[in-house]
Structures are given as C-alpha cells and as structure tokens.
Image (tube, rainbow, N blue to C red; front, side, top):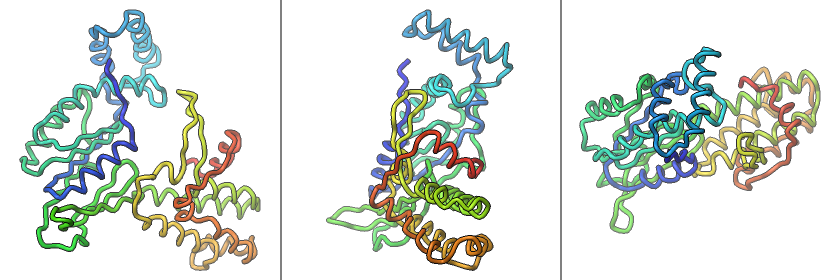
Length: 328
C-alpha cells in the first residue's frame, strides 16, 4: 500500500533544520478533530478493495474487520489502540499527504497521526492556502479550529538575533523562533527547543500526585522509584511489535536544546521538598524529616537529561508506579 508511518524524532530534527534557515517562513499548525473516530471506514475499505497491490486474502481479512466494526460492534470510525487502525489511518491520509507536500508553496510538510505542521516561503495568500488544505482532507475529517495556528517569520537584516518573533508547540516540544542574524556572510536564526508547557504541567502534576501518595502510605522507596521514573529513562516493550524501545525524559525529548523547562521543573521539585509556601510541601514536612526531604533533591530533571540516566523497571512495577497518576 506504500505506507510509511512518520517518525517523530525525524520530523522534529528536520523541522528545526528548516526553521534555522535565514529566509522568510510562514508556519501553519493544524490538528485533525477526532481523527480515528471521523475516518469514513466505508470509503476507506472501498479504496482498499480496488488496490491492485493488496492480495485477495488480505482484502477478505479487512472486509471481516469492517463487518466486525460496523455491523456487530456499531463502532464509528477506526478503534483506537490497535496496530491495524494506525496502519489504515495512514492509508486514509496517503493522498492528502501527497497533495499537500507537493503544493508549490510548501517548503516543509509533516504529519504525525493527527498533528500537522507546514512551512511555506510566506509568499502565498494564507487564507486561500488554508482553504485548499482543508478541502483536501479525506471525507469526514475536519480541522480543530481552536488548535489551528499561523506564524509569520520574517527576515531581519539588522538584528542581533536575540528577540523572539514567534513560538508554537508541536509533538510535545515548544519552538521559540529568534530573529535572524548574519553569521559568516549569511543569515540564520536560532531556535530554542524545549518541552511544551502542557508537558511541563503534566510532569508537575505527577510529582504532586507521587508526593501526595507518600503522605498517605509513607512508602519512601515507592516515592524514590516514582521520581526515578519521572526524571530518568527506561526500556519498555512495545506490545504491537514485541521490541524493546527506550522511553523517558531524554529519550522522548532528545531534540531539546534549551534547559529552561528542566530548570523550571527542578525549581518546582525543590519547592515541594524543602519549601513551605504550598500546602503539599507543608503536608510533606509533617510526614518526612527535613534531612530526608533534602536528600530527595538528588533527583534532578536537568541533570538526568544531561547524563541520560537510565533505570530498570519490571512491567509489574511500572503498573504499580503509574497507578497514582493515571489521569494526570
């Protein structure tokens, strides 16, 4: 079927390279609303049945899958969390990806599941361009208007490159784009890449839940292991493929080149363990003596990221450790 799923790390690496070039850019960010739920499965399987490269027995398997979804389970769209749905969704978007990436205005195009970023040369009519992209979406799919964003990145010919001209979040990262400056007779711009604010809030929430859970059960070792999980990296077996993959703070955000978010997280950690301004810090001080609380400052987001610290966790232990922040 000619499907090549997008690789998150490759997308981020290429996007950074494109944005550093000292030429005018315009960045478009789109998010597809209710992506898997909105895919028209009848149209999708109609296209698949006419695909000459798919064996007949595979078509029969797909038809049985469709029958199970629509007639028996009354499921709209594609069910989430299974590998076949991911593959079928990529096929559903194949023509859209090809169309947008080949538009003459497009300098860079990437899609990761339902998150789309497009970089142009900023010479197009932005309203008309957005309209063309929206019209190209497969049947049933729409963009989430609240998450659509457009950023103009002009060239500054007399600048020290320090000022920020725009920023956006994409795939868990935040990109802050500096003004252009001349380096060795050519223009370029610096791009500060760090964790997106949403990811920072999630990590803070998980720290709070881990500490709050300690104030109830008093299990110091459990708290230590949870902080190792939050600040470090570990191996996780991917269920669909059976392969081990590296995940965690550094592995998930290896393209970050700014420590601002990590320093913020360390300051937050310090305020919980040795501070007294928030209610959680005061609750912790009643259940853990100061020297013990201070010993927890050995856990550092910034240092663990720099050192690429790894820990070992069994699958059963991971399930126990993540229980307290399942919804955070």
